[in-house]
Image 1: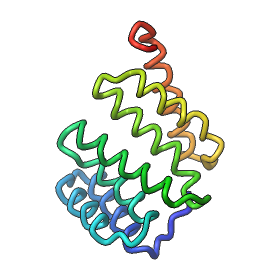
Image 2: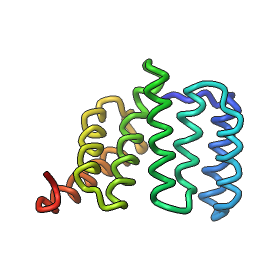
Image 3: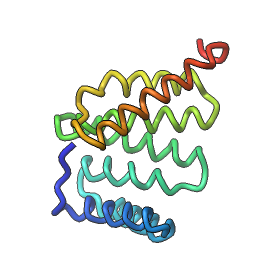
Length: 147
């Protein structure tokens, strides 16, 4: 997914990621919350909510923000978000997995796998492809808990 680095919401999220990488989670959360406050359209909301989800205090709140991000991606409705879906679905699956809902986790991990063709070549795409494969393997190793 090509993001406009001149977009203030994208810039705030990039600064938040830097703060996370530098071990400053409170600063990251502040920046992600600011990005959410400054959103102007569904694309901004999708991006901001995706990052706000990273800094929540509970699995339920993380799931909520992941769902908000997915909702806004669906509302964008064009190719600007097509490359974002593998990550969005992976995060939704991870939230459900963390909450113990393996059937729903598996559903989202499969949706992520269905969209890997939209991922770019290179480290980012490789990381997501591996994350999706690992997630599918985890949920498939618990068949007694799946439908």
